[in-house]
Length: 262
Image 1 (cartoon, one colour):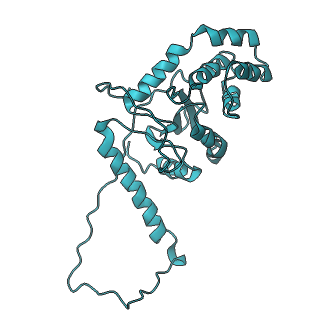
Image 2 (tube, helix red, strand yellow; image 1 turned 90 degrees about the vertical axis):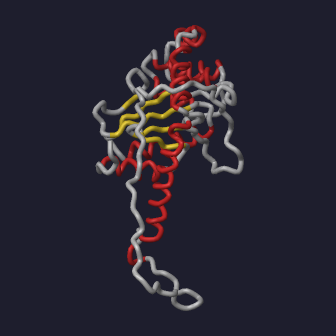
Image 3 (cartoon, rainbow, N blue to C red; image 1 turned 90 degrees about the horizontal axis):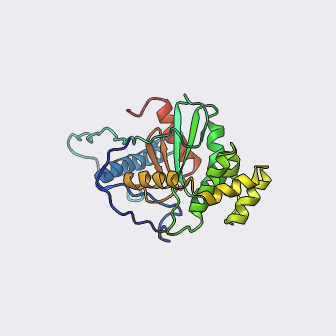
């Protein structure tokens, strides 16, 4: 389990317009500098690829003012530092999941069914990611309904778990991410489409029996420092936002190759 720290009331808000079109994550203060190191390492990797990754296909343009001045003395090598990776202990047992139990990669998603960026990940990256690593990923979904900005997120999470009671979680999960309309009538329609026991499903929606389970998910995420969705943990390593497939692959390939310390 993650180390417990002093609790604070999380502040959740929509991403400012000036930022990149992905929702964000803020870790608790004790992780802040570690996260900056990870981000700096990622930027370094990208810059290195741009400058050197294309090999002989990239040539430098000649400088407009003639050759650069050469240093007159010996040049000291730049100091090197080992990249720092932070692994978070994210429980997975008892949460909706699929994929082999012994898969080398476990991805935990903290998500919100009403979040547009979560839907974008589901539509653009989710299946492509699974197809890229057949049999190598165990995918776990944990609920983080941002109720202050998404008024139907909690009820959608409840509906998904009511479907789970009838062994239809992932089909219902796909239904919830297929549209932008929510509410009891929509949830019942999805249950009907999937040929669930609608009376049992409707009773579940009103029972409140899954509320505490979802609230515990929210409490865990907020105590960890997660404040927005989607947030992913790949074998405990955080990926923030609805990132493209290539960003997931970069991390997963390193993990499969054993290049990231435990």
